[in-house]
Length: 435
Image (cartoon, rainbow, N blue to C red; front, side, top):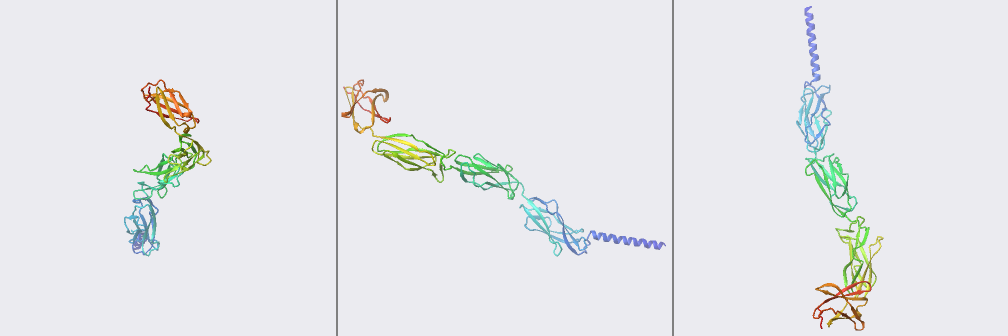
């Protein structure tokens, strides 16, 4: 009986030992199993910034056909785009069939594809996909939009565009870029960079002709300002047409008066209608409507101030020359009048016994209405008006200056008054009063 009980006990322990061995082989490989398949066991779909060590290792497991883990199998890890560093490029499966490596992301912000391979196994290679994101913004650079030219008050055709990158030249998305200008408006005034690190804004110029500036700023980095330049041009469409010079002129017959006629042309923002470069304005036509004379040039372009001018060439005859300036665009003409006269020709001047006599050719000086002679003291006219007597048949003017001191040399000037209201003075010097 005792022998039977002892036998039963031995059989029980043998059976229990066998069961334990089977369970242990199921959980931990003995190395005798034939590897059949490799599967992913952890670490996939992680992400981090560039040059960052991921917290979770990439893990695979090698199993036999019966599902038991297989240890001692070498697993090779490789990266497709060389944008990762492994703690182990090859790892051996442990007793549980696991092999792993730790990954440090590379310097390029990109999707990273990693393979874990065992030649000949099902599921090989196992694929992992990781994501390396850009680090914080380090630089800002101009992409496009600089040195544009546009009309005053208009939007420039190309957006102001900048790119924000990290220290490794990766584009940085979702960075705030601020746009500003004192020469118009920018919309939007702040913008987030897109996936390519690009932010942009549109610039509407102000209404003043000239050079303009705008800025793009990212405040999180030093030297984070980009300057844009632009040129605002006049519209070249007149909205204001006005006279700059006088309306009425007086000049000697047979003379040329350079650039005497002057008008001004402005756009709707009161900028000169003119562009440079290249130098181009709008043409104003000058035409003689009545009288003896010509204008030169007949068509004159506006300059940098919006002015256009022309010269007048008078014939050698008394004449009233009327000239019209026309810019078109429905504006009324601007008129000018030039009175042409012959200068007084003085033949001689004599004085005897206080009587001053002026000899001149009256027949060569038509259109005179009257004459006045004034005497001065020390070259400052004292307003003394002396009666003038005209002797037409002798073509002389006799002046009775009884108050002149004999032996003195008074200084006279003669005022000639024209019928059209114009007048001029002729100064008379070196007249000695004789007894």
